[in-house]
Image (tube, rainbow over all chains, first blue to last red; front, side, top):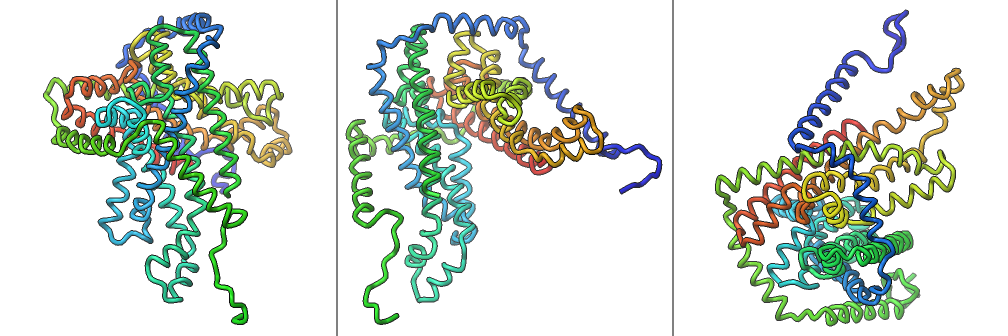
Length: 265
Length: 266
């Protein structure tokens, strides 16, 4: 470790240090290019806090009278998340087996599984919403399908990783009794991934609630429709009420999801 | 063993089998109720699927005129630039929030205040933040950059604070034991423990910001989202699929860069 006897101790050798400086320099250049290309106006940024404060003044106090109107859309939002999760889990289940190295039949199915996963994950929920609204027309059905399509990749990816990590011992044990493929799956593989499947589904449901609050912006049902309307008509006090409601629902569903997942594990 | 005539049954995670079946039946009824309330009929669903197949037919092959292509590239660039700027701005804002949200470093009231701010940032979807910021700051990239920066707080500060809470006190004590001052303790005892994680989080957040920067344009906050919404509105499905593919490509490149960087740093 001690190379030169009288050298002062330094944290990094020269090459590491130069490398680091170059990295920082590169980041700064990229940042500068971004800044210039966006033609940002300093004035805008400086007046941002004032504008925001002004908006909040117009929002206060929340329009509590509107509460009864948003109960139904809120329930619909949660429903979209639930059905979306179910749709996703049903489709993701076989995909997960395709994408797991130890259960996929061959190389081609493995690639197919991985492709479905990255495709579903790369297209954002709201863009799925744009597409499903064209397919099914405006409304909750489009939202459910959009949320479901978006979640397939997530569920299949995590479930696939879980399948890859199962203990081969119990699979071999079941196979040694002479069981066929289906029985090996039912008694050897499925019991090992069941807790993970439940956990992943609950986790995804809570993410889906968050997405369901906004897919209404493109007409796919839920509270987003009302939020969009309120904002477009500058009904700021209604906006604040809806924001508070969304915040509440999201926080409760996150807590519920965390609690249930802790129980399943 | 053979004396026991009972056949083996798979154990259940529920209290007993009756509870299990009640739970399953209840779940199915519940979902059925949900579906009936939303007025989803199999016929309508099937019609939608058929229309979807038709739509895919209209989307392929992805094509764009030269003007469209140039506009797409310009706006994709805008998205990426927004994500860069927002990551830096967001992390700069997030650092103090992170320290102030670490339970072992600050008094309880400060901790709870910062935790709530983080919670608000995490709970509101970026599109909600974006649509409000668009009204406050006008259409365009300023609203977009600020949206992504605000969303960065919820993610970065939360995970950074959790790292600060998990630091190894042994290393701090070791520096103190060599006679290091308070500043030395922080610089050599605390910061090196969290720096790799902080860089990893930043890169990961940048990757998320790229994804988000491609959609917030749908509500007018700049970037490629504006273009894809317009393409769908004008029934230019071939152009829309071109943009979709371009977005997927950008997102995947961002993800790859982020994954490689994180593997090297952490």
